[in-house]
Length: 296
Image 1 (tube, rainbow, N blue to C red):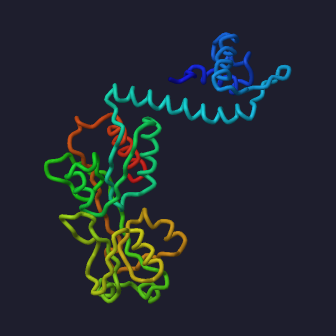
Image 2 (cartoon, rainbow, N blue to C red; image 1 turned 135 degrees about the vertical axis):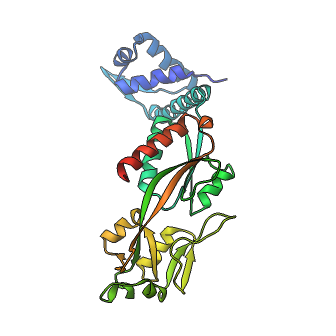
Image 3 (cartoon, helix red, strand yellow; image 1 turned 180 degrees about the vertical axis):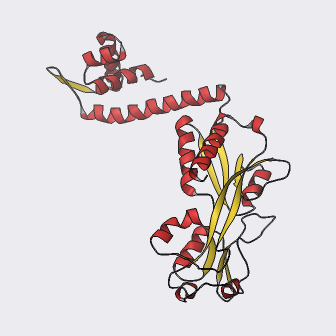
C-alpha cells in the first residue's frame, strides 16, 4: 500500500514550481494549510525533510531535489496512463504501423510522424522501410496498417500520392562525367550500374534501368548513394534523397542525350478506411497535405 498519494506529490511539485507555499496556494487554488499538510505527510512518511525555509525563501533540501526528479517522472507516467485510458475509451489506437518505400522523401515522413505524435502523445509509430514491392507485400500480409508504395494492390484502397523525380548520376570524377559531350544509353552499358534489390519476398525485381552489363545489387538506396559518391558506378536515384550530395558536388547528373530524368509514382494504400482509427486518419490527412504542398 502506497503511503503517499499522487495529489500529495502534486502539492509538493506546486511548491517547487511556484517558489513557496503561499504562492503555490494561489497557483493551484488550494489553501496554504492543505499544501503544508500534503508536504508534511510526505516528509513524515519518508522520514526526510524536503524544504528549508529562511524568511520568505523556500529552498529544496538535497533529499527534496532527489524526490523532485522522481516525483516529476511519477506524475508524467500517471498522466500517460490516464491518456491511454481515455484514448482506449474513445477508440484511439495505441500503435500505428507504416510501410514506406525508400524513395519517399525522408524529411516529409519525419514531419508527418512528428505532427501525429504531438496530437496523439501515447501513440507508438513503427516505420518499416522497403523497396519496390516490399511495402505492398507488408500491407497484403497485414503487417502494416498503411503503405506508401510504387505499385497499387488490386482490391485494396489506392490513390496516387506523389511523383518522385529520378536522375542518372555518378561521381564528378567518374568517366561518365569527365568526357565532353552527351552520353547515350549505349555508353551507360559499358559502365557498372548500382541497382537496389526488391525487399519483397514473393515478387522480387530490381530498381531502375538494367541495361548495364556490369551490375552491383544492394538492399538499400543509401548504400547505392555511398557507392556512387565513391566512384564505384552510376545509378538512377531519387532526387529528394540526393539533393545534399548534388549541392555539395559529391554527385553529378550524367548528361544524357535523352531521358536524363525519369519519374516514379508512389501510391497510398490501406485495407479499409472504416477500420482505421483517429491516429491513422490524422496520419493520412497530414501526409496528403504535405505531399500536396511540398511535392506538388
